[in-house]
Image (cartoon, rainbow, N blue to C red; front, side):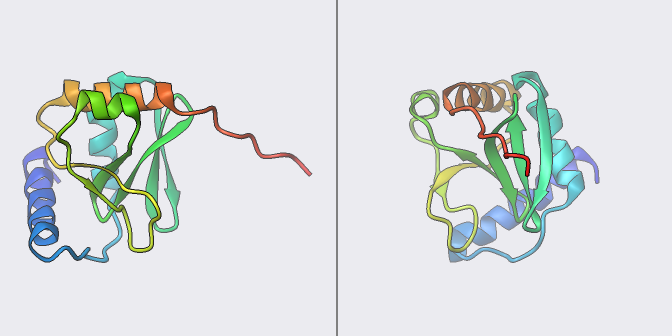
Length: 132
């Protein structure tokens, strides 16, 4: 899918959410995930991992965002609030306990990259799994 088609697809899904406040239950595409990761690649070491049918986004090995239903949700931190005081928030998935920043525009790559970088910097180190 081209960048333009991806933006159009994302905009249509977001419009549906805004009008109905209901999520379209559709798994995210790996193509969209790669598009987002390319957009934020200057924030640090970016990787993604499939989780429960959707995707977790890691910056410098810290879980800082997720992609659900082909929409980007970034964890809310004080640094993020300062950077984007009027940002929209939403729950990434039904049953989620925490709201996240809902990123709807991908044209300002620098702003999104800064948000991911600053969010990652403020999050605690990931806990390592103990080996058995």
